[in-house]
Length: 376
Image (cartoon, rainbow, N blue to C red):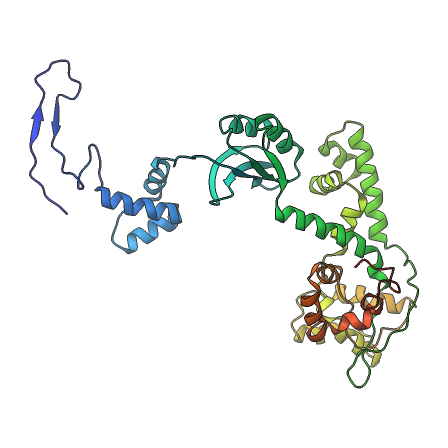
């Protein structure tokens, strides 16, 4: 608490709206303020770092009484810094609510400082901002057609480039789609008694029978796109096909059925970490799903018995015995990471953690002339 004696002045001009005013002390008081400049600056920094309730709790812990609304008002009152000249501009969207409401963020790629934020993903808003900044030379954006049109209209002198994240993400999706069709043909090859991978012989990979879920996804994708081309909305298509609106949105936004299939088949199943144990116990003669479920529960299995029954159903239906306990075939995501990793780094992985790759994908380790069935 600071007590001050200050002078109060009265204006003799009858037309003055102030009439009376008190003298101010530089660095300690400001007109119509309840906080000193130092305290206001402290609370502003707390609000910028933590905002509402979290900022109020921190302020209370250091002896300052300030509510969350006060902190938010101080944050809103901070003047926006001058944008200045921007030569390389980054443009990308973000979700207020995923799948429903999006906004656009503009960033100075030289300083990584946010410059502007607006609601929506329309190219007109981007063009309006660019007209006020003719100094922009490079626009780094994703592959959105709206952003591309806005950049061409607002800054025809600028060069448009794709950012590193989207280039790498699109490459990963393309590789996953190439790997996914051959993944079901990877055998589960057990190691020999010495612990070394078995020496594999060249074999012709036959196209496996398509899974029911793959066939269903392809039919749904074709039906959804046919109705979409007829002008129906996504809500109407969902009612026609009896599918959830989120599923319809996924099907309509996918360029091809392979995109939907790849994402669905890459999902890890809850039983996957315990497949090796189930295979070993099955080969030992334990075929009771309830007993196997109880055993893997003690190992940390979080799922139910039905998932175990479904996993063992393929062996009960006469499609073959469970393979011997050995390294599990790599997932599509793992194989994709091997392809996209620098050869020197991938070689170190193969020597340490990825011995399963040598045993289940022998053709990938050979020369391109003998392993033409796999991308390199």
